[in-house]
Image 1: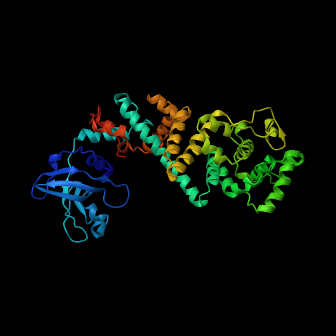
Image 2 (image 1 turned 180 degrees about the vertical axis):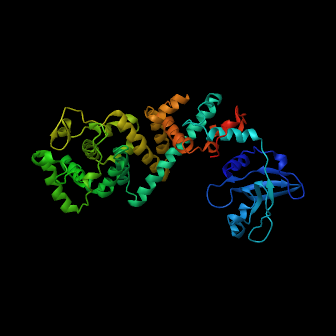
Length: 440
């Protein structure tokens, strides 16, 4: 058995309360189990227990076997001197803290059906382990959990924003530029686009915002796409030669360190998503007068943000996928779905952090409202949830379901999930003992 299951029993008081007794046989009444600690140190902080007429306040440590207290070195660590209770499945040894005081150790007892339910979930072959049980959960509780998960996912994304903010000396234009680049290449070219944003600072692009050819030259050149031999058909292509000429001058002026052109991926992509076309689209987004960030902060609606991001690549890319090779006609415009993904993953996290750091609750709330106003995403994960019986009604909810799938279901963190906790705590009996295949 894993300790995490015992943590779950303790946190939600799903054990037999009469099983907790001190060395003299006195019942231990748990007033408060404490605050669950996910970092180093005791498992639960600030717990309160009542033994007789005395209330004890301190920390709680949990192990499957009491002897693990010593094996883990807690007996030599002063951080464990305030442990008032050591909860175990098997009390196989007396343990002492670094002061030499015996730590009160108790065995915990619980209904076997709860453990059966736990194993049933974590050993389930479904991607979403509880999909057969979801219809039994009240929609109100599901909606509450979805709301919390959406905010959790947004909080996770803010970490990246803050990291970039610290790297760039609080340059919000640079932060937004890097966040847009990170998601502009979608999955296959996300890393090259992020590398491009670090190789070519936005402050250089900003100086040429009134000349789109120079912005494209900076981006294509820094991306390594103007290297000789990369596109053999481009040697006599006027557009390509103009870009190369501009980049030679700009590269010398700004001492730009360009990437290698081979890092960009073209295979398994639809031509409209080729990095060549995407870079030209990015150039047009970054060429907005007055700076993109100021327009984003002023935008009140999703439609205003879409107008900033729905651009068309340069005319050359309307009948080219790569340099020097003509192809059938395409629009070269960023679609609504691609634009909304940029808003969800780039714009909204930046807005949220900006509002928080500037103590502008109205901007934080606007970020959430914008997320609620965007249609649900269409991807494999959302289709999995549809199969399980849960339909997202907006990007706010689809983001929550992505968070739930990736951070909880995939990792089988059922006891950290509110839905999983409710299912396990019901203590459902297994139809067949052989279903207990293995322990997670």
